[in-house]
Length: 423
Ligand code: KE4
Image (cartoon, rainbow, N blue to C red; front, side):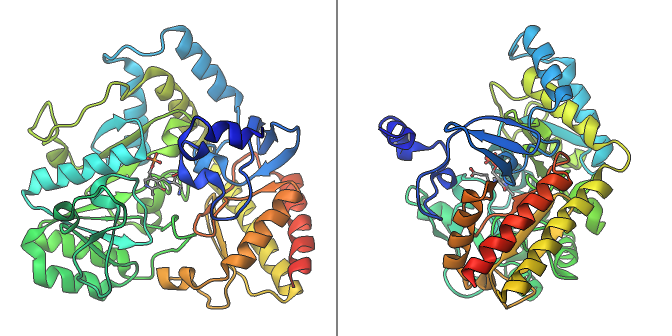
């Protein structure tokens, strides 16, 4: 029996997270047994260049010695205390040093927990129930956030997953990403009912879609006017697109921020934080309850802290950004030579590419209309050539500090050959 069938015999769907199942690209998922730097090693002995990086955490590359040493050292002192340890204070200080808007922080164990808790905090702090999110943005799988709009701008949410009660869904308003007018209209109609807006300041879950000028500014302005809380979900963009995240890049200060991925360095760690007055509403200081057995786990804190120390080194993001641009520029020229419409985005260590001639991509509808069949063929062609891309046309890509000239040139050589075959 093959590894995937063996997994399916005991694990729901054969995977512990749906996107890993290759349903969006076809075929069986690849099983990995090890990774180092920019490279993955499969169970059947192949080496692949990795552009998923565990969906973002592995910004230093896999098995960075400083991170592994920190994890081993922490583990030798005990895996979990369920009680305070100084590593939690140290990483919280480091996060605030890099992202000053997080005046107070609460560690959790996943991005889903971070956004779920931030939403509850916003509702508890404001006493309001409605939240605004944007179609194409993903904030983890808590009930209030698995909601898609019907048609129209102000349609009250309908569940996009069974198990989400209609009574809850109707408090989620889903608008179009980059549609500032729809945001103003929502506040004009419902201002005093809106607890918060949650947004990916650069969307990385509908491929990569940056904000248009004025969009984030409108969110900031409307929330400030209405006394609603602006939540930047930087689980993906935090320390990925710039040292201080998207909020530093765009110079916009949210009221709350959610983080994950990189702050755990590959271990389960995430966080929410922001204005001290809002965070004072969280238990035990305040009435909004939130808790977690492994929140602030010392081994995860050690991995995250070691990672954040490294990204804070001089020149880290200049080098990372240049590497990512080298990749996306090369993909663009290979597609042009092959006569295939392709548009790309890049910022820091995050990139996206969409098979479409409708550039620039700024709306979910444009991504949804792109050539997914061509993406599938490209994905498998690159996999056969030894390059592991995200197995979905709706995901972004991740470059690490370990991706060097060899990895980029090998990737672009493969892309040139595969695109020529597709033309
Ligand atoms: P987790 O619960 O998966 O740690 O984080 C949820 C989350 C929250 N916010 C943003 C902006 C995110 O991108 C995510 C998770 N990202 C996906 C990849 N697009 C995780 C991969 C997966 O679901 O397996």
